[in-house]
Length: 262
Image 1 (cartoon, rainbow, N blue to C red):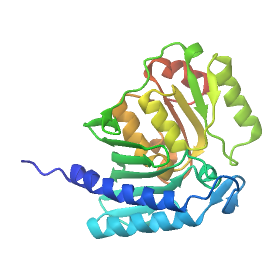
Image 2: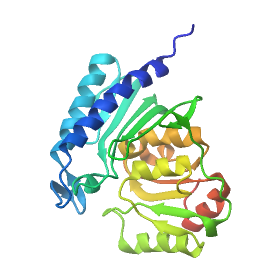
Image 3: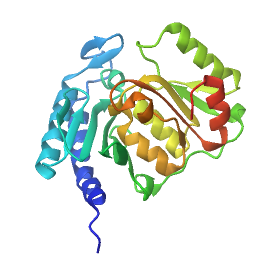
Image 4: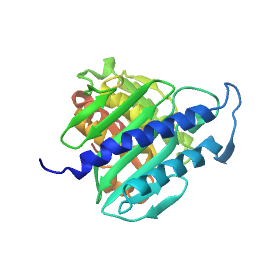
């Protein structure tokens, strides 16, 4: 039997993310609020962000001390051929108000290539997983991107960020609506991308998003057959970059409309 270092890591990481998600859920504020501090406009930081990242970092270091590690809160803390990238709570603005749409996202890169990912949304009871060449799954069942080919039947989500001007956001969301698509915005980039991967939506655009937001989702999208813009090649490895993910049947028309290569 051949030893598969990625499969071994993915299997071990499942329990790490499960425990991290349980910790986050136990720390979620009651509905209301928001509870937490602001890093920027509508950019919340809660006590749970730091606690969850610390748990994941320590567990991964114990399991795979030779691996690199990068977190949203702590940055790059270790180097290695394999690099784990965690967003301890993606959708913190939802989390801080006691809402359900948030997740723990843990991606694995080999060099600069995404090779595995886990995204767990404990309040929704959902776990997305993928390994390169092995398919993408939701709660253990295979998932595929939507078969939609008519943009007038499509549901497209766009992520909002204070780093993007009102004018540019309006231009892009206007282009989506001009296709006849239904616009959405749910407050979690990672879950928006998994929605594309499993066919719940047909596209997602965010003008400025970070590696920790998408590290796990990139491989899930790839294995689910979605079309994705070259996020890593466009600067996403080292800073904020644009991502566009889409169902294959509307990828070109959506790409042309929002003027993002895919």
